[in-house]
Length: 320
Image 1: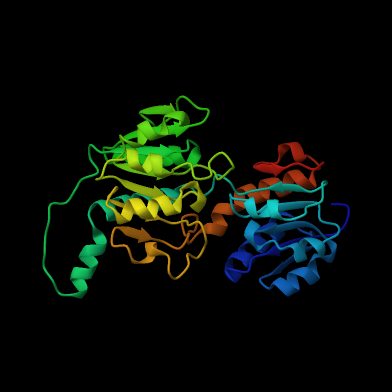
Image 2: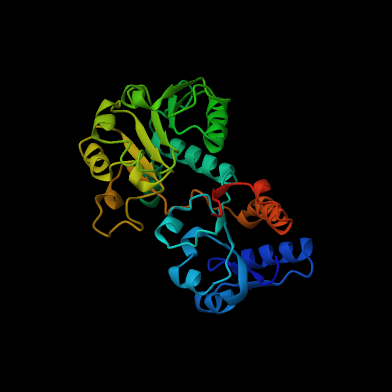
């Protein structure tokens, strides 16, 4: 950096903000590191900032406008869709934290699979009612998980699923095989593959091509005993078609961490469906998030300061 500073903006966790700041200061002594959890203060501190470290969804148009020297944004999340809605300078480089969310995403998927198949919500209601009722508990063993999207997180999930005795089928637009999967099939066969699924798990990035990828046709192909689990993006699935499939018993249920609009409207039927488990977009969260994010952040900062942008990882947008 010729001049200027590194601005760390983390409004959700002052502790995480300190973790980032302390690690950067430790590895790069003498660097001008500024940290805040307040948006107004972030805009004030951004005047000389060449580097902005923040979650993509927290970067506002006002913050960009307040940082005329900004040269690089490192997003502390994997999804950077929000940045596409902002007018970013052509000279700006954007990198992300893609690849660090595997453990928490995998554990949430497994949690939803077990809770849905064993009907944990009903057990919790019975507990509140002091009601003792038992039923045969469905096993994951021998079931089929169809994972839409074949990447690093999907691979980790596939390995965990196989440990439970599931057969795992990947759905990809480009890959034909991947470690951890029993088979990988093309996206063009999605409806056919959905018909085989006991769990249809969505882990595909959201793009124009994946908008409403799971639509009424795909849902109609599924077994009535099957579950949909969406830990990707809300609009990967046609939410209206999903609600209808759940309402009519076309599928057994759904585990949803993401939604077309977040938070969902109060009158969204999903809130009150007994065959739905909703979580508040927590799939990427963990109690050690900052420690997970640090390796890529520090690597990229080292490359940036060395003037070697080609060595930076997870580049979403290149300067120029």
